[in-house]
Image (cartoon, rainbow over all chains, first blue to last red):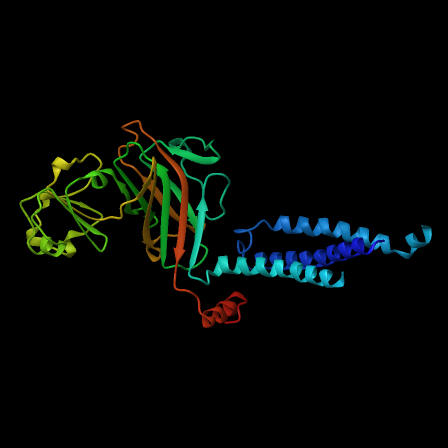
Length: 72
Length: 277
């Protein structure tokens, strides 16, 4: 795997964790105080973003998995 | 490469901090001002659509701007109460070819009684009488007999016809000098021939081609809040239906105002948010 691809995937994995944490914070704020977040942004968009980044992050993991390494 | 990777991660981590900071600012209005705009393109969580639908056209789009036509004398919209504010300024952008008076109203009790404030009066805007303007109070005189508004109050012309629009004369003029028949509230059917003087607390709207941008400010504490937590507003144009005319409403902006929040206020709000006090 080239260095550039590794850096990009690494950043995407980081972005996934950040967006996941953000989604949880937003859901928590919305639960405490309905409308606190949903009056201004769509929380679903944040969750979809986490899901999307998570899918790519899994791709990074599979690239690094020893089983795959042995296979190829 | 590591350097760039680190910088990228910092940028990624900053984004949600900015997002959450912006959401907190919108909710708590730390700066003291919170503004929302409904331009008919999509639903707004704070400002409702106009109602009732029977008095309105469908939302239409022309030249990438959306609008809705008002076809009756009065229509309503709701504004969600999101915090405690002192003032609510409503700004309406519309095209009004014919209606002589346009008012904005806010419900002040359960029975939907409205406190009405002026948005536009074509009679006042187009009158070429002598005009004295002081602290947003305008005195219009058919014949120039007074040099100041104070002089008008002190030597009130009881025998002349005085039109009153959004102004309480009783606060400034001795009640004995006020003859009921000669002091008339300005209505849409009045013309300049009906009055010798007009006194009003009125801000001339901004007119840009066929579009009018008019605003007025209510005290938020006066407003009635319904069971769903909304302020209720109305836009009225008396005589609109009778004249078979319409008003094309293009944008509604609501600005909430209060004192900016200090650090002490923030700590109190956090305590109450997490039920610590």
